[in-house]
Each structure stands twice: as C-alpha cells, then as structure tokens.
Image 1: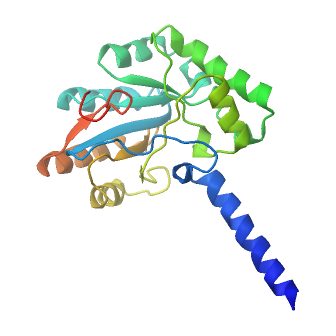
Image 2 (image 1 turned 60 degrees about the horizontal axis):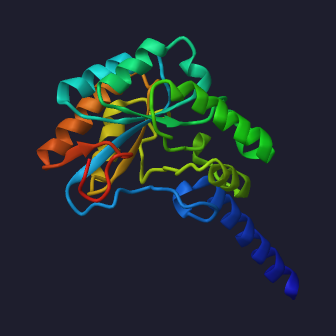
Length: 228
C-alpha cells in the first residue's frame, strides 16, 4: 500500500533535484542574477563559451554598428592566443565574465578545491583585461552545493539568464530569433553563444525587432535599476 507512495515521493524528489541543478533560475543552490531589476524597456545580451576566433569578431562588428554593449562569458582555455580579440572586446565597451577554464561536462562533479582552481585559472586569464572581478556563470548553467560554495568562497556574483536561445541546437537562425522575440520583455538577460555560425544574422534580427518595440540594450553587469 505504501510502496507506490514511497516510489512517487522519490521520483518527485529526483525530479526536483534535477531541476534544482539544471535550471540556474531555480535559485535552489545559489542565487544568480537571471533578470535585470528593470521595469523600463531594457534587455541584455550575453554570450557563452568564447571567444571564437571566427565568429566573435563578426559579433563585435554587429554590436559596434548598433553601438550596443554585451557581456561575454569566456572559457579560459579559449582565451589562449586571443589577447588582441579580448582587448578589442574591452576597448569597445564589452564586459568579460568567468565561464570556468576548462568548461568540462564534469565541472559540477569536481571536488571543491579543484573547482575553485579551475575558476581561478580563468580569472587569471581575464585579470589583464579587466580591473574588477567579473560575474561567474557555471558551465551549462548547472549548479549544486559545491558550485555555490566555490562561488561564495571566491567572492563571485553569479549570473544566469531568463531567455535561453537554443542557438546551438536549432539550425534555422530565424526560428531562434522568433523564439527570443516572442519572449521579449523588460529586464531580459538573453543567452547566446559566440561560436554559432549564423550569430551575426541572428543578432541583426534580434536587435532590429527589439529596437522597433522601443527597447534599448544594456550591459548586464553594469545595469543596476536604471544606471548602465
């Protein structure tokens, strides 16, 4: 009699734990900034996993054309040999975020000391380009008590998102743009990826639509309720 109840309980518990880890917006293990504190029509663009030597310069060209700042969550090992590109990003008013050094699928399973070492290794790569500690975004947005403890002990603020583009999954960039545009609302933090081949075209669509609706783009790490 009690067996189905017990099984249901543990199934629900398992689902909750999966959700708590996989959805950074859940806030179960750590509080991440996933939406700007805004009632005005502002949105923020964030890019993960770069820099990408082929696509990031094209992204910067589009952002420069529209005079829009963005926040790039950099993977430490991908910054090697990309110093000129990182300097360009900073010179053009963009922010750099810490996205771990290795971006391994096993990152959430690392022991605390190893996890902190990985985050700090990325920080060392970014320090020469920024004079303040950047926001941290865990690989894949996966969180758990160890990720929360590592971020807290290193003094990091964590940033997630409230609009996931799925630009690495969907092949047609117009369908990605449609998904993002349908979710347009004040305070959105949009997750994009540097290495998406069609990102320049996708960006043009997103920016053009948002501006038509009266929105302006701000840098997520600088915006604090009306200041950028």
